[in-house]
Amino acid sequence: MFLWHYYLALPLLITIQIYKAQGCDEFTDLGLSHAIIGTSLKIRLLLYTRDNVTCGTLMSHTNLHAHPQFNLSRPTTFIIHGYRPTGSPPMWLQNITEMVLAREDVNIIVVDWNYGAANVNYFKAVENTHKAADNLTAFIKKMQEHGSSLSSIHMIGVSLGAHISGFVGANLNGSIGRITALDPAGPQFTGTSKEDRLDPTNAQFVDVLHTDMDALGFREPLGHIDFYANGGADQPGCPRTILSGTKYFKCDHQRSVFLYLDSVNQTCTHKAFPCSSYKEFLDGKCLNCDSFGSAGCPVFGYDITKWRDVLLKLGQTKTFFTTNSVSPFCMTGYTVDVVIWNKDERWGYITVKLHGDDGKEAVATIDHKALKFKSYTETKLFAQFDKDIQLVKKVSFKFSTGNAFKPKYKLRVLRLRLTHLEGKKRPLCRYDVILEEGKEVTFRPIPCEESNF
Image (cartoon, rainbow, N blue to C red; front, side, top):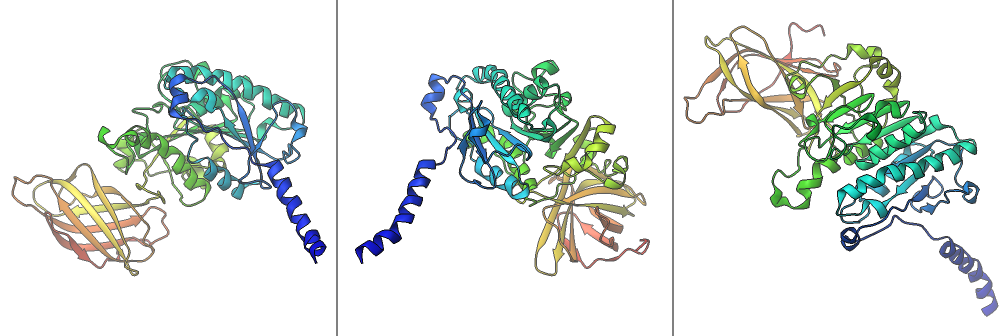
C-alpha cells in the first residue's frame, strides 16, 4: 500500500519541483530608500506570451534561442514604464500584459528599467533614457538578425517610456511599426529638438495620448495623431488641490494608462474629433469627420491603426474627446438645438437628463461657457452624457444663469431637438415649453417633425 501511494505521489512531486525550478521572474521592486540614494541603469527584459500570461521569463540580451517560447515569427510588443520616484512597480503592468495577450497572440516584453528610473533626482532618470534606448536598440537588432520584422514591433511607452520608444525608433531609422505614447513626459523635453524627444518620424505610425500637458506631460503634438482627453490637462475625478497628497501630482498623468487599458479591453469606444482647440470642440464646431471618408471619426486607443493610411495622408492630426471620471470612461454625444421666442436675449447654462425605460439616467451639463440664446435663432449645443441610454423615455431640462443676485428668468422655448451623434437613433423633439431658471422640467419627447426619419 505504501509503495502504491508513493508511485501516485511521485509525478506530483516532480511537477512541483519543475515549477519551483522554473519560477517566475518579476518586475524589480525597489523602495523609497533606493530612490533617495539613487540607482544606476540596469535593463531587465521580461517576456510574456499566451503560454505564460502571468509568469514572466527573464530574457537574455544576447542568446534569444535560450527562450523557446519567444517566437520571432509573432509580432512583439514592448511595454516601457516611466519615472519611478518611489521605486515601486507600476500598478498597471499585469493588467496591460493580460489584456493585450487576450486580444492578440504576440510576444510581450516588459522593459524593466526601474534601476535607472527610481531616483528622486528626475534629471538623472532623464539622462538614463538615451542609455536605455541604446540597450533596447541592440536587443532589437539581435531580433532582426534572427528573422524578426521591424514593422511587426509595437512599443507602448508611458511618460519617459514614450521618449525611450522614440529614441529606439530613431536609432532604427523609423523602421519599427508603431509607437504608442501615453502622456509623454514634458519636463526636460518641452522645447527640445526632435532628436531629443519623441517625433512622428520615429516609427511608421505614432499615436499619442495627452492627459497632463500642463504639468508632467507634453503639450504639443508628437505623433501622426494626437489625442487630447478632456483637453489634455485636468482629468475628471482627479484631485484639484495639493491636500490630496501624491494623487494630486500623478492622477492626471496616470489616467493615460487607464484610458488605454479601456481601449485594449474594448470596455469603451472613444470617438475622437479633429479640431484646432478644445474650446471649439466643446462648442460643437468640430463634429464633422468627412476628411476621414467612409472610415468616419477615429477611435482612440489600441485599434487606431484602422485609420492609419488616411492619417498618414492627412499629416499630423489633433483630436479631442471627453471621458467620465471612472471606468468605463466612455461618454455619449448628442447635439442639442434650442430655438427660443423670448423678446430679449438670454445667457445661461443648460443641464440635460435622459431617462431610460430601465430606470437608468444619463446627465450632460453644458457649462464650459455662458450660452447665448436669441429669439427665433437656433443655438446648437454639444451635450456629452455620462452613459448611453438605449431607449429614451423622458427628457429633463434645466436652465440657469449662475447669478444668484439677479431676477429669475424664463427661457421660452419654441423647439428643443436632441440628435444622437452616431445617427442611429431618431432625433427627439419637444415643442413649446417654458424653462424657469433653476427648475428642472421633465417631459416625454416626440419624433421631430422636420426629421428625415
